[in-house]
Length: 427
Image (cartoon, rainbow, N blue to C red; front, top):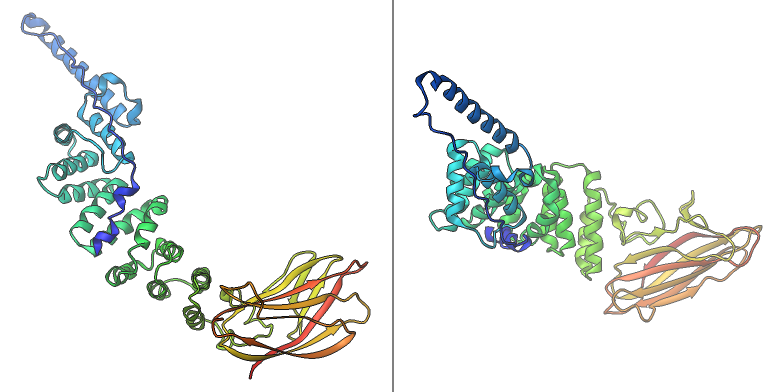
């Protein structure tokens, strides 16, 4: 199961041929044997000065980018290791590598500088590539030295996953994503492909307090991961995060379920969302619950542009206002009505002293929207009038898209209409 966490890592990395290591140019000192005795201190001082100067140069250039190091210093094992490390960071696993040279340079660099993380890492890689070990011990030492270097984490993820150690694999994912969040774009799709596995999903819950865990949930939703697995992750996240942090993920999953045609799952998930009123999906009228954006698209979406406005008035009705010659969908919603015959009761009110907006209802089945289930223009009459309409939801229509369109004629003032009441009854 842990293999699922790393099987795509190699495929995500670019492959290229590492640059050859530069050969060193030796520094030749003259022999002091032929010198006179009284010159020996001066010779020793010259040798010490030359050696110190070289070490100072090495110390300086070791702190500079590998590509800027002068050629005459490239033969130093530490520089060879750094150049190889830069190449490896661009191409993991390497397409071709001189294992013996990598091992020799790494060992020489470690002898000169025992706390050289890159050298320790490459020593482990040489062992793994030559089949003389897994490199796990060296990678772990490199991690301790470097304080969670990204390349160490990648290697430890790979070795832990191949050993079948799910907890340790995820521990290194955690360190990598916490310290280097920019790698998430590459890693989230890999992790998302594995969260449907029950063992991995349960182990991931241990990291539910991490910010990257929320981003992983989003990636899992986008990857069409099983809703049960995503719901489990959301349940774990609820123990650590505020509702405001999770609400966008609830809406994202709900919209994805509807888009995939998983209407029964969408309804069940919406009813279990925290803070959602029990009747929010069944009530057809306009209220705070039925316009709750967390339930989109199972809640009413109202037009709120400058030239087209639809809003709930103080009496629970829908007030519509349009500028001259405007036509737009002012209210839209998806319902999950069961097959059968329904009666829609609506009370429409028009003000006597303002232009009247024409309203038109339409309902279509999601997935087969070619022919409307029901459509009806609302008659234009002064005052307040109640209408009763009847329509039938067919057997194959699991979800329905409601749209209310409003149109304004050429007028001097804004056109208005008010749905003072709307109710739905199944017969």
